[in-house]
Image (cartoon, helix red, strand yellow):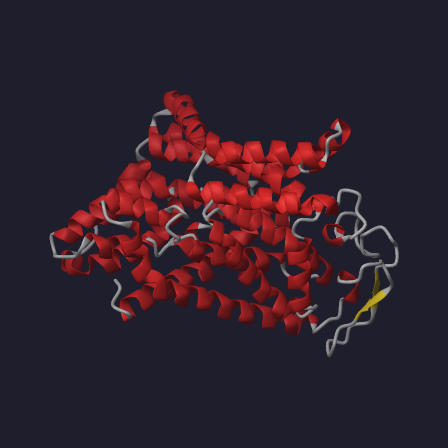
Length: 462
């Protein structure tokens, strides 16, 4: 019964948010509360929620201060050279822009943190997508898939969890998987080309010189071969494009914005490098690092209290949206785990593996990792389910290393799971409905995971 209710709860949640019948926050809170009553454990709902909130509180704190930190870095101009370099490559060609999104997300993902990846990627690319009227779900989907493939880095989390759960070396899990993961990343780039070509057919190849000029000037946005009429942009001197609502222009690239701190550029660059290094080396917990980093960045760049308050207020909406979503997700995960639904679902799936599949448990693990890491937290999958799959594999001579390698297959889809806090940073900053992102990305992310799995089998890694 718990198995059926668990699947029903997840299905109800996904259907309602994809059909936009409920907001993600409301669905994450009300649906699990309702199913908790159906299970007959309504009296324990408070305990489940507190347990879930307690588990995710450090993540929420990290996201809150990370948003403030990177928001300040964007305000003071730390990423302007990167943005300008990307825009020079992309010009105003939708194909190049989508490919540039994938490349940027993959490169920034080297720090191992999805939230920072999405903040930097969206802050760089959002103004261009918005100005050219490109599909924002293409941006969020491509960024999530590129980050999902790169999330398998040993310091990214899943590989370390798999190695710890099965008592194997993380490098023995990751290094042999590099060719298969490279094929997954290549597939994301090919997919970006396909999606970019589709956007190019819809919009035409455009020119957008105003993005790169130092002084606001009148520029023409011309659709080549698309039958578009010239559209005037710029010329207002305000940093936003004429004909666009306030806040939708290229403020992030305005070379005259008052928050720029060119004299502190190298201080901010060194602070960011030090922060990311400390995060990778695990010198301090990540929430503590971002708390200290945000406080230091605000104090040095904006020594006057009114300026600090203005910067915090400027990023308050993103902070509230993301932290609210994380705590709402804590209700969902708390009920799933507290009622035992997630355990029953996993045992049902494992118990229904045909006996003849025993010698192919690595393949089975790879396939199961795609839906299970979407519907479960990484901790739940790697520490709760993976050991069971490994034991089943051992009985048929399948090594723990093969099982561990197969277990990271589902990460491209996992990064768009409603249980991953970073995805709310992505859709929140991109101003995309979570349901629209889910509808778009699930099929492509699942296909990316299958490409990695197929490459792993082809290369003899799994």
